[in-house]
Length: 280
Picture 1 (cartoon, rainbow, N blue to C red):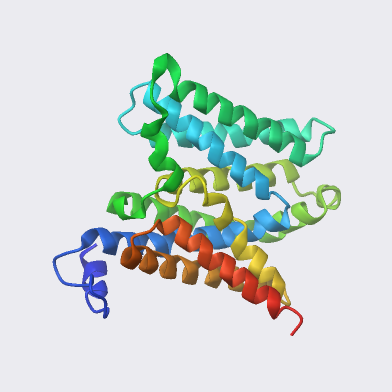
Picture 2: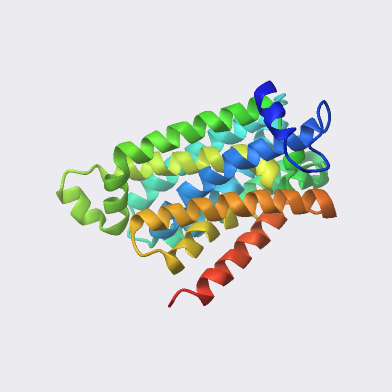
């Protein structure tokens, strides 16, 4: 981290002073790691028409937090990660073995997760207010160890993309064709779902449950407005997420608002601009 702090100290910002404001420097590094993750995963979320699935995963992560707190875990985030992964696996199994549409299955799982989370968090007359921070998020509280963990996950996601991008894309576009070509569609979807579950859960406490789904939808939705091929699609999604993340963090620091909400608003502006110039 000392190398990162030395580099940030060169920036022309009020908070970029040597030996101080480490929380802001950690937050900037977290944004530079989190936003590429969302930019990459966003392309598959939008392409697979699974926008509501990421929202349901956020609800399951909240339930996992409630379970971890109820069990007295010092770090309930790991309970949330385990619960979200199990949620994603169970969702894929049910979706594959039922004739119901995906949005219907997502609705069933999402509503169940929300109800279970609220029930557990208010059990025995407990107050729900202690979980309010999860709804809004606080990226300024990020720790260097968590940033390192997210960087490792980013590396794994990139390796996954390089190794199985074609299979993932074919499975999303035409599952039957992918299956006929020998692609294990179920396992491709499972790995993809688990990756989203882990990223959503680990970043929920910093981005906020109320807006985290937008980070998995808006980057790719904006990119589709202007991209002419798959390479541009992923590039624009990645750049839009990173630029909105940095701008949102800066805005949050100077005006005192929620960083997650600010990032979402910048992504919304980015979507509006790409929508206006899409035909050109």
